[in-house]
Image 1 (cartoon, one colour):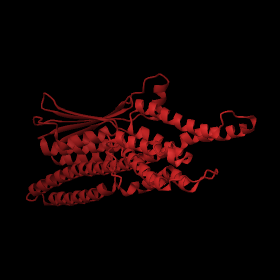
Image 2 (tube, helix red, strand yellow):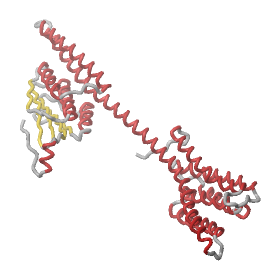
Image 3 (cartoon, rainbow, N blue to C red):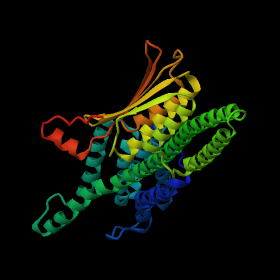
Length: 404
């Protein structure tokens, strides 16, 4: 995913933008101030102060334009022309503004990589740096230096070399900082949107699985109670009582969906599935066990049992169903089979799609097929490698098979 930088007026970028301006102001306006008032090194003011300040302000504006474009991750429109104008403002006033104006070349160095492509930028940077260092060294060192000025060599050579790197680097880095702050802000927004989308998906998936199962159970028990009212009133009252309990459980589950409080359990779902299918006249056989599997895998397989039971009640005319649990080679498997399956159409519906996504989050798989003899098979597998199995695998032995 490519991030689109936020507009520079975004509130999240105000701090970095202020820092960018705080770096640009001394970098661009120090030379005009020294030119007008004189520098600390004893260089007197230039004779044309009316030229220094307007030129310095124009240099600040052009450099700010280049920096804001770099902060947006772009190159400034007409950048070659504005860079040329910046170079004219830096070099043209040199005969009138004196040696203090030389440091404006550092601003020009900072603009070059913001405007030009890399191969052109390298050549221009070398030329400007050579001109800056040549002018500075030429004014400091006489044509025939003597031993007395060796200390000046040791002082001014490192100073100008470091200044040629530090000042343009600070200007360029401040623009880069704004860009990185914008990308970080965009990333935080994208992550927040992803979390919200994932939570919506979880709620819709859990709601579908819970309410589909609960409403199927309520419908089944309601029909059963109606049939029993005339011939077995106590049994009908028991079914109505169970129906009320299912409705309460559905309400509790609905509240748990929004709070992620109560988790479904494979053991409870197996008991519930056996009771519901038996009430519908389906003979249920449960084979095997899955003790000690991780809670996440237990919950995913519990949802598989719930969805499989719901599909049998809603879509099949089943008389027999089998639920098989098996664990081998670090994988927990669950298989649900039932007869009386109608022809399969489409991809199995949104319930199986959501269930496949739930298992996929654990690197598990879900498959379903209608067998040739009219049976339907739903298979779920989830990796559940235990510490013991990991040690067996690491030692070069095969994982122990657990019979069920």
